[in-house]
Length: 246
Image (cartoon, rainbow, N blue to C red; front, top):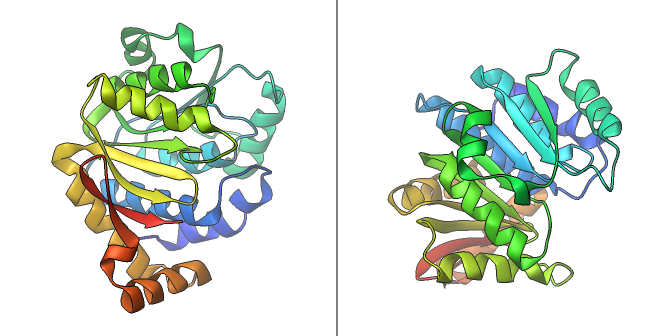
């Protein structure tokens, strides 16, 4: 599921950018994005909350493969836009297919975001404000902007140092705003897909774990799966069975 080019990028350019994205989440993202391409599906990608550009560099790397553009939205109050741009150019080249948009995502509307993207998104990363209200708003944006087969990654879900993120998801679900369903929790990121595609991506998650055995943590997860049983690593959450890679 992860080709040689992705492996090279993840072990070299991606690893050189400072940030909090853990390797397992990045490798899983790469595998799922490649799975979309293998199925003939492509669309723009976007991230709300770029910071220094670590995770966004992976989206930009994939955008080149898919022949699309990656869009990054950030207030740049914590890291200057120039620093993030430099990181991305170093990792993905001067001609990297990305566009940075400075501003607060709370001012974005679904219609405005759709106009910027130009087409339904294949993938959305929600990693902006970690307060409940803005998280709910950003999830609404992601839900409206992604294709029926698209994926959404919610960063810092269940992180005790960012408890507003978890509340934001629960608000989004409680209001019945969209039909995003949890698929897998992997190292600080909760991956969501439309209900119709949730099992499809759940199967891809398992395939990733069965093939990415060069990662020590993946091998440990597989051993736990075999030793403890599936109920230990796939648990019910929001009325769905969700893979857990903690």
